[in-house]
Length: 207
Image 1 (cartoon, rainbow, N blue to C red):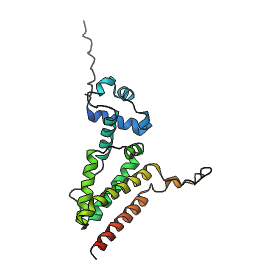
Image 2 (cartoon, rainbow, N blue to C red; image 1 turned 90 degrees about the vertical axis):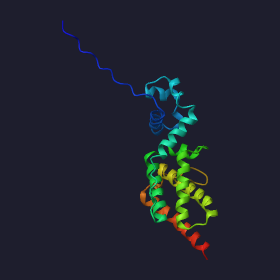
Image 3 (cartoon, rainbow, N blue to C red; image 1 turned 60 degrees about the horizontal axis):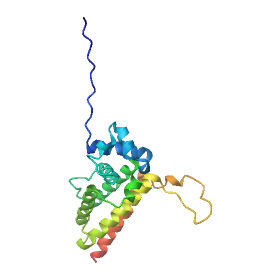
Image 4 (cartoon, helix red, strand yellow; image 1 turned 90 degrees about the horizontal axis):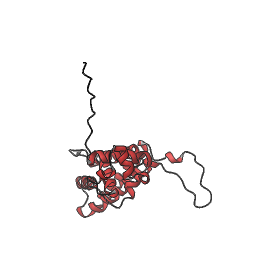
């Protein structure tokens, strides 16, 4: 009697925080944060919803993991270039590219009241660049915050475009202005404007 061929069972990928965050990132990027739920995430992963809670405490922790996963794709040029402006320009352009890659993620990340470890690393990198620029120590934290806020605004525009809004009355017709601010040329202009301001402030301090 001929032996029946045995069916090869496909090995199931174990559940992990990294796998959970990646799948959640895919879902959020497709349909937005509001549509994300543990139940829908479990279906996409092919697991029971309760099993996710063994790795992620709640939806807020899930979103923080997603934001961390996204920001880990932002390169921090190391070793830092000798020219501080080159370092910050590369960082700014990297932020722009990331926002264009994940337009569904950035609005929620910007609105979140909670930071991530990667954001702390970005802050530290900016302060090191400002030190290299010769900015006074007492001015670095405030300048870092201003730079990061400026970068977040640039990222929001890169992800969603910039549309002019009327003061009152009917919305203005769409004339293509929504695309303004989304190109690499627009990002480079904004970054250079920001760097010129830092350089001017540093030079004024030396007078």
